[in-house]
Length: 212
Image 1 (cartoon, rainbow, N blue to C red):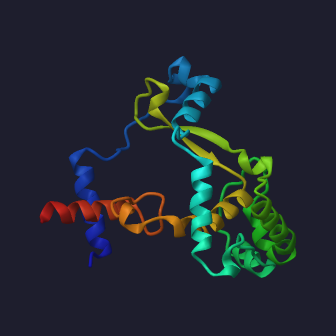
Image 2 (spheres, helix red, strand yellow):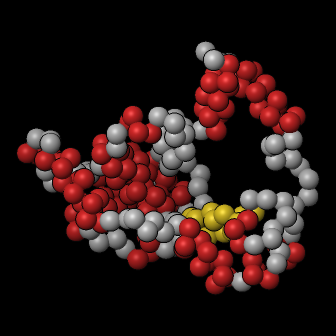
Image 3 (tube, rainbow, N blue to C red):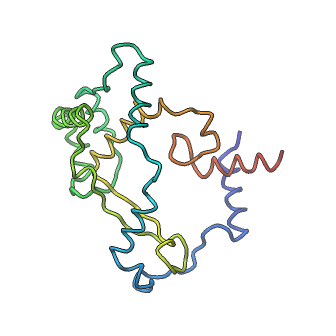
């Protein structure tokens, strides 16, 4: 079992090769090419790379229906939550940036007991009717450089911040619905966007494979 010191040592080796990001000065945003400073150009680029041309709503619906049919009759309807469930989630919220609605995390956290009932009804209504509030589908997007020298919009990546309630609902859907439809064997070599995945896990696996 790798210790904390082992992981630190591996990262230090990578930094010494010069492959890891260093502390050299990056371009300021006012030094970027004009196209990278145009909001519409950057937004169109992000929309293009974030859109899956093979996305099929009907295929996703069929996966969910198939999963629910495999469960007991009581599970054939979308899972609903109680105010107690939501209250626990709100009370455990960690520090996070607010979304477009400007509502800070501490408001939900400090007043979880008072807000849990109405938020529970809102989340359940959203899931049962498949109607997502427009504010939940809106995000504050900040372009962040992927390289030290920006030459085109492809050198930028988006950091999207949605409202806190939107993030809570998304996590509930992934945890209680979508994750059951995924086949674990097909994601053994994926470390991002899944529980327990991290760059450290990638590094450990790579080191192990190289030593075999």
